[in-house]
Length: 147
Ligand SMILES: CC(C)(COP(=O)(O)OP(=O)(O)OC[C@H]1O[C@@H](n2cnc3c(N)ncnc32)[C@H](O)[C@@H]1OP(=O)(O)O)[C@@H](O)C(=O)NCCC(=O)NCCS
Image (cartoon, rainbow, N blue to C red; front, side, top):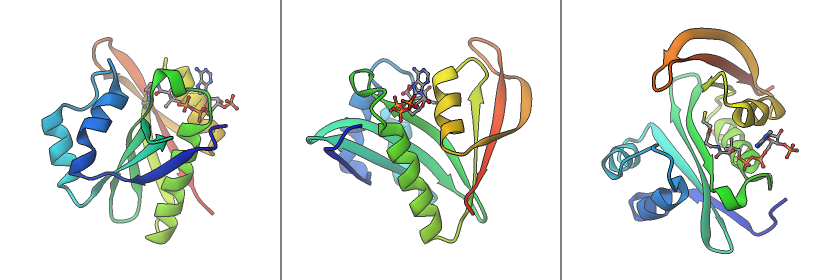
C-alpha cells in the first residue's frame, strides 16, 4: 500500500510525466496524448508518489458508460495497490457523472491486468477472437456495474 499517493486529472502540462510512466511500453505517442488531452470525452487520471509520476489510467466517457482505455503502473511501483486506487478514483468520477457502468477489453494472456480488474469488481462478459495483433490474441471483454 502506497500512502503518499496524490491522484489528479492530467492536462497538457502532464504529457512528459505520462511518457515517463509508460517507460518502454508502446502505449501513447506524444501526438496521441495531445489528442486525448484535448478531447473532452477522454480523461487521464495521473498518480504521483512523493511528486514522482508513477501511474495513470485513461478512459473514455460515453453517454451511459465509461470505457477504460489503458492503465499503467511503473515497474518500480507495481504491487502497491496504485492501479486499484486509480480504479477507485474512476468509480468516484463515474458516480459524480451518474455513470455506473464500466467496460474494458484485455489480452487473454495479461494475467496481472485480469486479476486487477477482477479484484475491483469487473466480470467477464464475452470474448473477441483474435482481436489483438502483434501477437494475435483473443480479447476478454469485462463489465463492472457500480451499484
Ligand atoms: C496491470 C497493472 C496496471 C497493475 O498495476 P499495479 O499498480 O501493480 O496493481 P495493484 O498493486 O493495484 O494490484 C491490484 C491487484 O491486481 C492483481 N495483480 C497486479 N499485478 C499482478 C501480478 N503481477 N500478478 C498477479 N496479480 C497481479 C492482484 O490481484 C493485486 O492484488 P494483490 O496485490 O492484493 O494481490 C500493471 O501490472 C501494469 O502496468 N501492467 C502493464 C500495463 C497493462 O498491461 N495494463 C493493462 C492494459 S488492459
